[in-house]
Image (cartoon, rainbow, N blue to C red):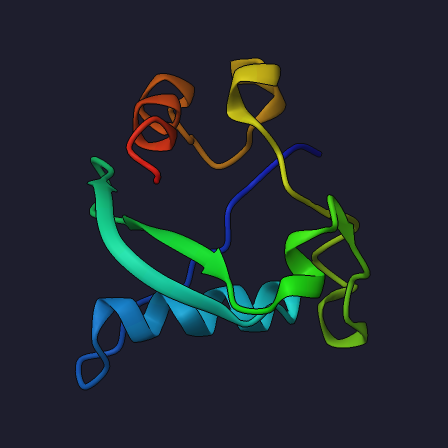
Length: 106
């Protein structure tokens, strides 16, 4: 087990930004505003800037896992990629690229 980011296969009639929003909602139950494209991974997965949309959520570091996600998700946290190591991440996420993207955030 390790850290991962929400992903979802893009459907033809839905924009990449809407797909990102759906992935975050279905995985975490969090409503986010999807911003600019940060990078595209070699497997063509697109990673976007996402911001929590309410003030209460912005004050938290850990979030409850929604009942519908508990089969696949054991913990939801805001994680600083500079406080992690490559082997903490799953699904081939490149930590160097993730850190570079993190530096692009406002």
